[in-house]
Length: 219
Image (tube, rainbow, N blue to C red; front, side, top):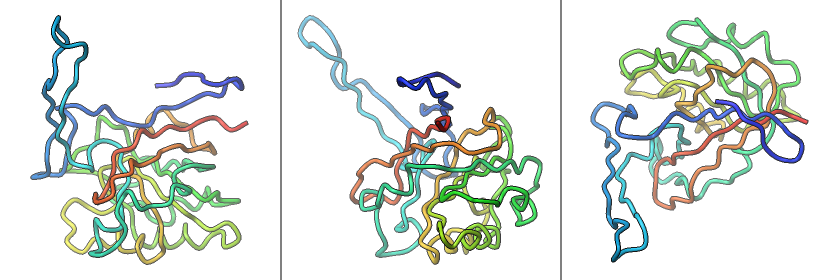
């Protein structure tokens, strides 16, 4: 989805998947449900719904407490990582893991945020998706010391394979104090540089937060 916004008429890419009862979650995780709590009638002036969902539903930001006991929650995270210049790197067709060789062509003057495009949303499922090799994270994190990496995002459900029990890429994120976005939609976004806006909710005890992630054309 694209649109224009603001007095500078900068193009916007909506990179968030729909969130409803069809939204995929990790097997066994909480599925999305919604019900009408107040109904607009002659006796009630509004509709109000109640919803139940995993904080990992749709495009979302993992908090460090998701993979480290005692670490920061979603609501405690600084917003700096989720707002600013970023680069979309096309890794389409790279296979089960994004390896250093798949990003090597796009590392010059790397901004502080990187999003990895691996495949179309239609091909994604929890049974089969592309994850991120920890050595690729290490390369991205050390490429530009003067402008250190803050965030990595991917257009699949997780930076680690679905059957991983050790979560090496999540722990690489933790070791390097990096933030992560997962389950983005980058199908229609060309490789290049953009402004990222993907703010997590201030959920003070949550291990993740849904985000409404967008990319905006740079001035």
